[in-house]
Image (cartoon, rainbow, N blue to C red; front, side, top):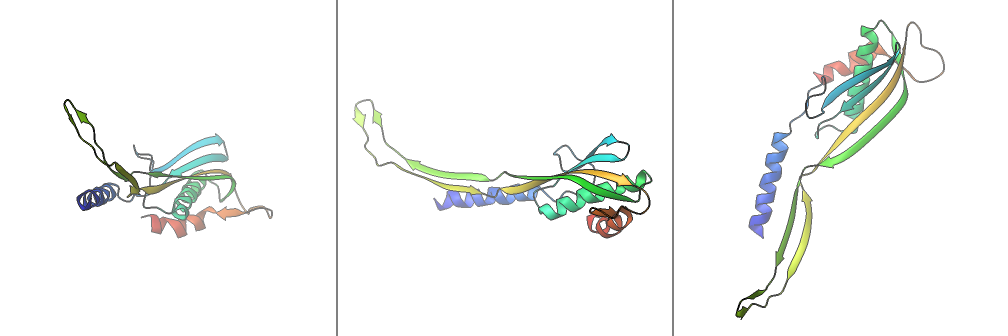
Length: 162
């Protein structure tokens, strides 16, 4: 049993090493990074898929950073988040189990006691995805609502993302 646990622990270390931190940028083939869809001239849907080493707050910051970049690139000064969704799922890991049994072998019969167990999953990671729908504008933001200054968001989050 010790060998099974040691093997499972080694596999989880290898699995963790294989999934490194995702750099900020467009979505890769694994879905880590940002994607955006222009809904209207001043409205976007932004999705950011975080790698397994990113807490949900960081994934949301990166989605907000992409919204700020899009606002500035399109001549806008601010954006407002009008829709937000965050989801998470656990992926990977190694399941461990053990069992012993007996049976009949032609003329011989073996009798045994069956033992089984499930030790759970080792090494799984949580992956978070944030979806934002943002409305962008120029000049001073309206008084009502939560608005983000696009330049300030880029200045505060972009250095962390590099």
